[in-house]
Image (cartoon, rainbow, N blue to C red; front, side):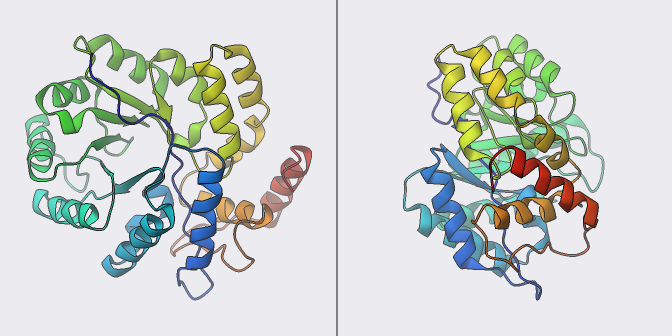
Length: 298
């Protein structure tokens, strides 16, 4: 049986940005400290961090800051995907040099390629960079259960998959069924909305938003102890907020950052998103405040 190196709760950080579009590093550091103090197993820098909207210098500065603040305490996962093999290898080698412990890469999506091209894309990257790689399965760039299993069987660095193409439960289930050699380590994502259901089908963790780390850590620990009903009840308490936060990433970053301000993690004015982005209306913020108040999070 393959030893599982990475599991548990790995939130994807939100990047604090001011009205001028500049990163607020003090708030980024405060967020990382808060997540680690909440008991998470790692932190990720990925799509929900708006990483695809930053230039190369900004991406490097975010990773450097997170690695320095973390100081080796938990796993740091960096999204390094690009639209070519060479670019992704370049991004991945740099991320390793800057201190990332693991990578997250989705298939290319600008143009449609056959299965064999994406299979070779991942193999070439895994051969070039010796770090664990999370295959990121997204609706616009899916990693099928068959591909995840075949890649894991081909290369140990490709033994992780983050399942986000909905519905996620059958994809987690199918991956486990196909994984005869027990090579694949499955994580959920998509905000952690179906974390419990994914745990029950074989996922060993989830990569949710950074808004409720204490809740996700609690349900993960309870689930591992066999307190499944207790974990379900705890998760369901936050379902109204989870629903709002599951909106598309054109809108969600504003809400993540607004809530982090309300929870005292970000300072007011660090809650801007990189443009273009659809901003929530006034009613959405009022609704969020009501939910946070009912949950005792203010």
